[in-house]
Length: 174
Image (tube, rainbow, N blue to C red; front, side, top):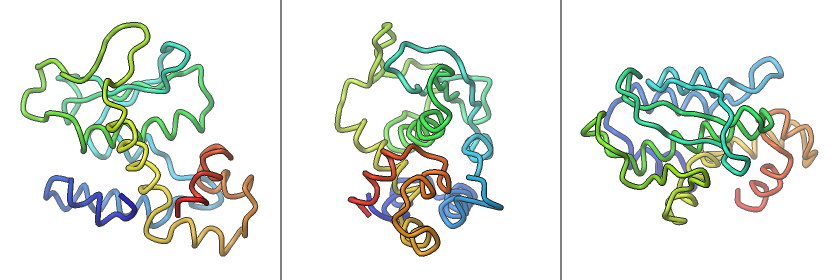
């Protein structure tokens, strides 16, 4: 997944979802501040909750019959804001790429609810990371930001609201 077109192939046909994701990618920063991933997630129907999670867990997708789309995103309140932002986008990726949307009260098959909970399939983790990265940096978004800030990693990290390490990885991939 290197472009929004690749993402759109895996989305519902709803023009509203595509519009929201496209607009987020098109302008990741407004007035010098990174766009809110919480606002994006809530517009897509998720409830977003900051809560303490096990140390190595950045976030998780939890079925919630009371959320507008049937899912809640929990992010680790003890991690950095940049980690929380990426975790929200990563969990949105799991929703579109891997979640069963047919039964909001059913158990999520691929989650291990233990304290060391991680998705069982490393391939799904990579796909969710790629979804988040494509949403942030794909379709020329990183190139456009580099035209403004050059290769200044701290400035690019601030522009996108992610860690410097995330920018370093993105510069190799995009």
